[in-house]
Image 1: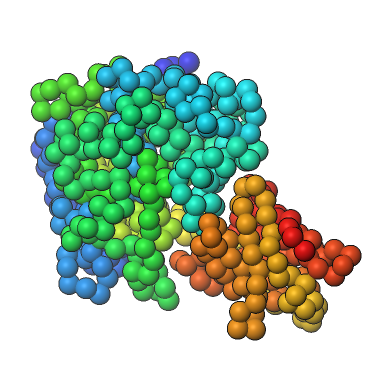
Image 2: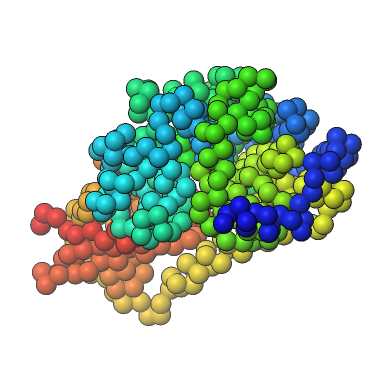
Length: 506
């Protein structure tokens, strides 16, 4: 059925490999370079790097702009970026290498590989496979575990606590993009080697391809002198404000790399596991990553029907079949890879800012030039508008929700709210007084601290997101008959209805 869908969607628009000629690519690359220079000059991003592969050759490799806004150091092909969720298809390639060598299969059960791991229900726990986790069909809600990472828990503890999260759909019945689900799939797949995921990534992909600046460890990224900072806009100015350590979800979002290194990976994928004339991964192991398993819907800007394979988006769009994946850190990273396997053409774009549609805009423009010889429309603007529509209204809605009431009902005394609260998912939360105000501490050993500002009655607000410092979130208390709070709900940790904690102790 999926093969039939592919034919139906591909046939009106698909170009033959003969259309995407070397001359057409050369012309497209000169225009791509001008477009990239333009977006940086216009301030759309502080810096970016691009690699393009055609056939088995890297035909374009260049950096643009600056590693950090306001500083002189420029981006080049060897500048190391945090690539966020572009890590997912990289990790799928690593697991494909393990499958190729017989360490594991895509259908190996997690219960056999990592018996300590649990979902909330016994049947999915017993049947869950590596394939399920890499295609986001386990039933885990998409944000499960992201909240725990935000408050300082490490990978092992986050994966353990996923057992407390209720499913968002029946097992294998729904698609829900899960960072920590995929992370568990990767970690479990590496278990038979007796080595850590980070070691396996090095041995099976980075070293064989000469990706000497690529790592799945944040410490290695920090050691790089030629690295890009993360940027968000504050008062309309790109600012390197926040750092991001993604080690907890390294397989899903923790890779750091360069345009040069990622271009070698693109060569391997377009070569069906053959790199520099040598088979590094068997084609049947790698092919599985590109089988469309879960429907994602329509591309929001360019149209086309999109599916998810194993760590890859599989799309049937304007220029036929493509494989791709985007990445983003809301604290300042945007990345994208797009491959056209029939034409052996691929582009990878890594940028040091959020939010921006520049990677998609440049990729769409390049595809138009390569296939049609001209750009259909201003894709950068179209994608920028889409991202603005996704995030701007959410912040505005939060502000509207917490518009100061008039008059505000008074709160109880601080002693009514101070105390220790607990649930299995979040663990301990302690509310105390400091400097005449209430402070909430959560995470391991109170790793994260949030000042509480009275809003109305027993409702307080805090501002938990460093990249949106003016976006409020509520902290509400329910008082018991003794005049003290019996429970507390932390809105920014309540995405999966696990943000309510009961008072313990007094």
